[in-house]
Image (cartoon, chains in turn blue, cyan):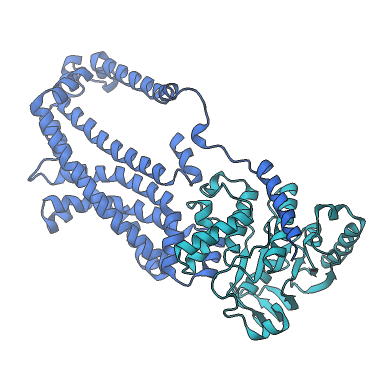
Length: 310
Length: 265
């Protein structure tokens, strides 16, 4: 064996390092401009939309609502029972300590419901998807029922759940789990099954263990899809918690109970405040999971960054 | 820079005595392959691959070239004849680099020793050597996302080198690369072939790549694939880049090309 040949390779390698080593740019370094400017650009468009939204709200409460609804009632009346001015909502719902305490404790209940329910749904959903990916018969047997979970009208199911579990925390929890399970199962299963075929061949050549294949190939590869599922489920879990509240009036009061109460008692300012907080909760979990997904996969997954920009 | 070889354990483990005796690394004995759907991919294919030989198979697309490698590696079982090969130290480079995108270059190169249960210290040692062999020092902590196509292929090569393969299968590994990068990788692979001493079975549809690298070129017919011509390539190793511009090289390419034309008939 000639060391000459190796030297040829050495040279080839050197040439290579100079000209072929064109690294693709780190995505975060693209764009330029100062960081402050970037933040401004990020927030300015949503801010404009928000301003327009508030302006339209003021117009509606001030004069337009009777026109829009086609009623003869004076605007003051409709303002009092349907749509108060935004600043009144802030004053009554957020700055009044009694109301704020009610709303925040409702929020706290729904946060726990959504959080715990989502955690349970993630454990059940991911394990179900793994089982389905490992054996065709599991998938064939259970997938139809997973679809069933998705298509059953949750509102119709809730009273039945109440009959079985009573009207306490665990019944509400079950509603959250049911409503958030399906997107977790489908997205995780999709992720597990979309592994590159040549990578499967590579693992077939070098290991016989399905667990090694699952753990080192399929599971890491499914994380981006899995987290999309978590993100969708997170939004749904908040909806589940609040829908549950509507039916389960006993015990602690969630935001759903408060919304029900406020609308019955014609207290629109508190009503809109409660709606605002429930939206905020949904938004928070959605953004949190999106952030987590990019943290976990942004350094390797092609679409992670693009996902952030959209 | 002297000769280096990657090695762990006893390289002769599992190396069958018969193959060892006659220096045969891989042998196809009247191998046929018919898929369950009735497609006959290969018919009566016989050839041998000596230790230290580099054999390239060229043929029309869809003629069963990839099937050949899947049979050699054991990913598929032949439906007729027999494949003789020691699969304990088998390298396989796919058409794509097939890296795990969530692993760095180093972790990708460590994958195969990891799957074979080599401890992490030795793994790191083997991986460092393999990374050095393909000229990727300094890129160990990069993720595949940031590497060019040619560099990804090098990582893929390094990954297979960690097992110190005695037989190395290549399934059109450079097909997706541009001409210059391809030529460069041809030279590098050739140098690795000489320094690491594996027997290579290379699939391509690029005649010049075939002639430049190989000790022998086999031409396959359209489906069902049969070997219809065989050429000894007389150029001695080491072969340098200038060989591509020699008249003998062009003549050799011409001969293979004419045989390949017949394969389409």
